[in-house]
Image (tube, rainbow, N blue to C red):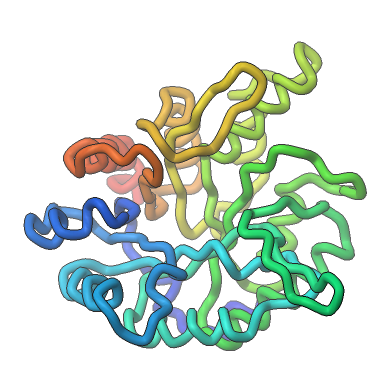
Amino acid sequence: MSTLNRFAPEAQAVPANVGIGWRHPHYAELLETRPPLDFLEVHSENFFADGGAALALLQQARASYPVSLHGVGLALGSACGVDRWHLEQLARLAERIEPLRISDHACFARAVINGRDVHAGDLLPIPFNQEALDLFCRNVQQVQERLQRPLLVENLSAYLTLAGSDRSETDFLVELAQRTGCGLLVDVNNIYVNALNARIADGQDAPDPLRACEHWLDQLPAAAVGEIHLAGHCVMEDIVIDDHGSRVGDAVWQLYAHAIARFGAVPTLVEWDTALPPLAVLLGEAERARLLKQPAEMAA
C-alpha cells in the first residue's frame, strides 16, 4: 500500500515548469540578472554547512526562485542503511530552504569494511532483485519519515550489469514507488547512455537504442514521475559517459518529446556539471525544453 498520503501533499502539487542546475560559476551572474526560470536545482551536499557564503547565496536565490534539492550521497541502496548524519543535514537544509522537491539516486555507495563505514564517492549500481528492493524500500521510507515528504528517486547511468537481477529496472522502480509512495525522477539522458553502452557491449544483438529507451519510458506509470532530467553525454570509442558536459543531444531531445507525450508536462531540469558554458547557453537549453513542453501544458 502506498504511504504517500502520510506526507505533505504540497510536495507533489507543483506546477509544470523548467529549471536549470545552478552551479558555482553561474552563482553571481544569476543573482545579478535574475533570468526567467521556474526553479533552480542544487546539489544538496554543497550546502550542508551551518553557515558561510554558500548557504547565504542559496538563501538569496531562494528569495527569487523555488529550489529543488538533488542529492548524490544518500546511497539509498546500501545494505548498511542510510547515514544518519547525512540525513540530518539534509533535513536541516530542507527546513531552511523549503524546497519544491528532494531527490537522490537509485544506487549504493556505502559499506562497512573492517568495522569502518566507507563511502565510495560514486553512484554504484544495484541488482534488481527482491532483496535489493526490500532494503531500498526500508531506506527510502526512513528518509521520507524524517523529511516528512515524498522523495524522488532517479534512475542511474550504470557502466556494468550486476549479477543477480531477476527483473527489469523499470519493474524495480515501479514497485519501489508503489511500496513507499516515493516518486521517480526520470533522467532521459541516463536511459540513452545505458542503451548506447548496451549496443557497444552486445553489438548488433542489442536493440535499437531509441526504441529500447521508448520502451523503457512506456513501462512507467505517468502518476509516478515527478521530474525529468536532461543532460549531455560524451561518446568515446568503447564507452559512452554521462558527463553532463555538453548540450543535450538530438536523440535525447527526441526521447524527451516521447516522455512528455507519455507523462504530461512534468517539471524538467537541464543539468550541466562539467565544462560549463556561459549561462546564456544553459538558459537556451532550458528554453528549448520549455518549447517542447508547450503542447502538453496546453492540453493539461
